[in-house]
Length: 175
Image 1 (tube, rainbow, N blue to C red):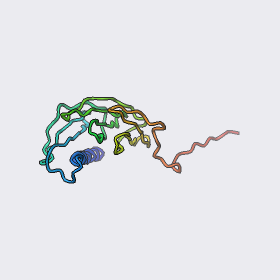
Image 2 (cartoon, rainbow, N blue to C red):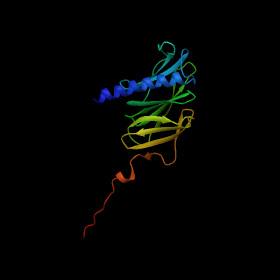
Image 3 (cartoon, rainbow, N blue to C red):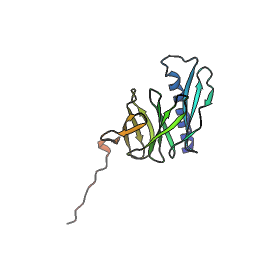
Image 4 (cartoon, rainbow, N blue to C red):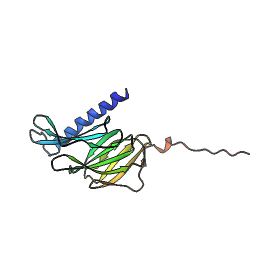
């Protein structure tokens, strides 16, 4: 069941990335030109770059796949399409890549998240901040973005557990 769910997550991510890249030119309907698609493969821990023909949907590979951490689980592309970030839930880190002019990827930096099992990434519309939802630790790591470098936001990670649900420690004293 878990592998089927992961497959569906990856498939949904793929469809969303194609849609996002196709709509990135601010036209309501893309009828031609080219877009970019980035795909992770958990089995061999890589990220691959493709050019998408926006008229036909055909894909063509852009260079070779590049390595990433264990169990890649999410991808985020900057609004300026100059960098890609990949969350790796098995190694608790985020790898960054520069998007080259031909659409291929060049390895950037590796950043540890202050949490466990990052499963989702989100970015603000200006591309200044990246957020990683850490499923294992029930918190969100926040980073400021500079090129392909990530710097933890002060106070990060931020808990997602409501105060009413936190376990309180009770100490018993022996008399």
